[in-house]
Image 1: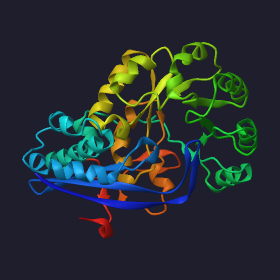
Image 2 (image 1 turned 45 degrees about the vertical axis):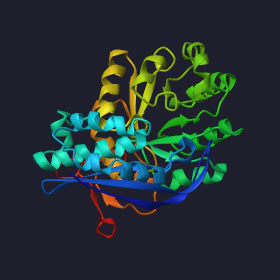
Image 3 (image 1 turned 180 degrees about the vertical axis):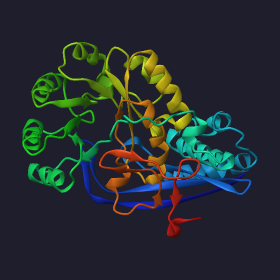
Image 4 (image 1 turned 90 degrees about the horizontal axis):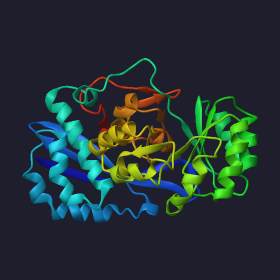
Length: 342
């Protein structure tokens, strides 16, 4: 198997602020797998607050290159279990290889990844939210006015959260979701959930730090809104511990290791009666195209990552007024733009 990779900078369309910091750009490691004249793409985004280092990833690839080149993608799941021992400590890197394998396998079989996974599109697919980062209230209002959208995810975790939501609700009738990114206390969660329920907010994502999950059992029985786990649910092993503490989970491919483990997470979550969101990092259309394969299987969608960067490096699955649009083609349906090709 042929393996190529490169690091690409992704300047953001505007400074993105959440409770964990502010960011003007991301970097992405793009992985390309080649076999029998076909290629597949995967992506890992560098997220500082998760301790991600793309240079470390490059070193791991180089260290295992001979073993990787000797492998063959006979099925994505089989390939995932071959590479898992090499990258088990780095799910973001594992995700890039797993998604590239799914893309490559689709090219080899001349089918879309959804076809191979027996995922059928339906007429009532859930729409994706568009994220509004933290900022001065007037700027957050302006972003909503500049980007008409059916669903907004509002980043919170400030001392002005209630004022922010009142201002935004006064300007839009769209669905509103809230993401505190671990920025609240128990008391804030209880109080704000009541206030936000009165504003017809749809759900709250990750109100408490994940180390305080033991307090979620008391909250979930009293809170006025559904609560979705994000930082508290990063891998398959976390689903059981989220049961009884959260209404649902947010599955992000880079956190769990790719499409292969994500599919197992969906099966487990459904058995436990948990709602499911498919989410993303700030990433290009390569990562978004991979995550979008799961849209027919979930309840909530948050796949606006490629809309938050200034210039995409690839084409692929995209959003039109919240709806997921799948291009013609095999595999994930993504292609690097000419200026970024290998």
